[in-house]
Image (cartoon, chains in turn green, orange):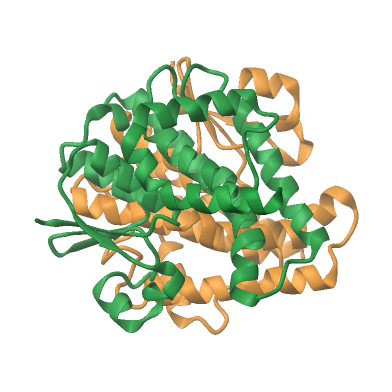
Length: 226
Length: 219
């Protein structure tokens, strides 16, 4: 089997690619990488998997590629990806590209940063982050989620109109991440909530499987709060 | 009706698009928007140009598009962008995509972050940023430029191989921005310096950076 996916379900772009491949029924060799064990930080990973020492990575034969958005585009050209994910029509494709470019320094950056500072940082350092600093990260994330609702979710059922595309899958995986840090992004955001439910429902079992670990941890931390 | 290009050459992604548009001889109507006037923040800009209230933007008849990398790809699909910038070969194209994706939360993130904190925000607010924050931002940027050099520039002359493409143009425009903030990105980085000198020779690069150089020479 020529395609390998190196991924960890704790990583948002890893989940997006996993769900994309499974839903599209594209065969691949499953290569999970335990980020929590630092599996990506050793020399073996650096020389054999990816010099960037991150996930996700694909190996297509001896062609190695990182960056989930670059991988999505590669798969759309090379691997019979169903067209709805990444339309071939130039203007429809541009709309998906526009979101996927915007999200890097918006919803990805702010949701990931809050998750890292609130959930990951204490695990790694054994210390909580200073509350005032954490409040800053939370505010920036919340402002960005508000922007997302206004700028991207008021045009139809999905980000690029009335049909699900890769934009929705990538966005949903990012928006789920703060739940690990006991933050529910849909509270006070009914449009975002309705959109997220649609994405979860349309992608069904594959989405659920990819988010199983996240859902378990989110439920546990929610119970701990109560 | 020619495509409209809304831009300010003070903005890194605007310069990158300007260079590839000019070099590919793609006809367009120039719509310069001086960011320092704040006109991009007005309601009329939001309505008539772009709801995102940022630059660059293109209008191709009634099709509006933002995000410089999305625009680059649209130009490749629709407007005969020179293959040199965005190769048609699938694996070569993937390499350019890989860099353009990586740069968002790496050199763009850190170089823009420092530039805004050191040069832009004091201009807008009249207040200097705290020494502590500036020091942190500068260190993060410096570390990331080291990373950029070691990950992308050690083996080949240009970012994805032996010839320059959009990856190099986009990266160089981001890195030049730090010089406005009084930073020398080439110091202690011989690979970066050699690479930047080569990219600066690209057609229309110097023209795109006239404003940047004018600001720096007045400092």
